[in-house]
Length: 451
Image (cartoon, rainbow, N blue to C red; front, side):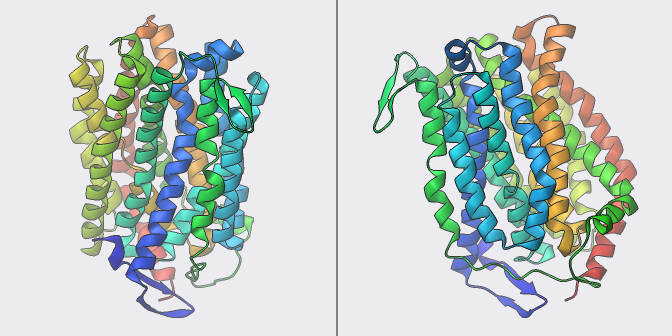
């Protein structure tokens, strides 16, 4: 299934086919926004030592900048931004968000101390928070349910491409430019290379935001009892589906902690344990994390949509259950290995299958969400899974394990492996317990949508 064949339908217009070019172009623009967001939030992981040396920061402060500063603001913005997504044109929300988080990223490059950089990183998180709720809501109102997993997997490729680009760009900067004392930037003056990295990754947002202009705001699907949904009704819906919510938080929240560990600490492990320079491990990790993950996402979307079309309402969780059972032990062994080749192979397998779930998770949330709640429920999901769990504890837990349990910071890769060993079994148990509740919620949502 390709993006070009997506069908569109709404309550206000007969179901039909939109221009294949415009459909593909819309998904491509959302994908570009996702890539841009991930590069902006991730590139700091490749600039840790230069920032520390320039601003005189500690490891703890750097950890706060990478995790808490971004995650708390992203999380606090999730629900109110989701509310705006449910009420106002998503096209304009995306336009403003891309400009604002790009400006915030550029502002990181002008930081003169910890407080400034913390606030700028927080602004990046706040203004990125409407991206996924807006994009998911647009996609859910543009494609039929039987194609949702495939298209959301295509969109989620942005997380993988963005991570790979951040590693490669950061590695190039660290290896090629940081021997310079400064770089002269037109109209600004002399800047440290790490400052230029933030500037060069942030400024393009001013222009990329314009890409959304050619597209009309999609009509929203309407469900029975349609109309604006109050916060009380939304939280009532969540309470009525508490088993579903708990299942998704344990499964995807726990595994996103593993994702956070890989993204935040794999570069440091390659440097400390394997003695690779930034250009070497930037390219190696970028390729290992991106290419297998893209293939894995597309395969997951295709398989899940086929299962769902055949009547399997729990296709998303069933697919991920098999992935976890088969691949988690292999990835654990590779992460514990002292071989560079095996470690990179483990990263590739993990990013290709084991922790490659954002497209699956996003589709699952949209499959159970009433249309008038999609923005807020998506925002709440990313608050819990991405911000509070993945970004915060993913950056923290492997470091705590290596430093306080293994007593060797060079073994941060083993800390990532142990994190996987904790959360993969919990995810399997949660799927086995909660699959029936998710299946019932999907069936209920299907009946509620007006064709």
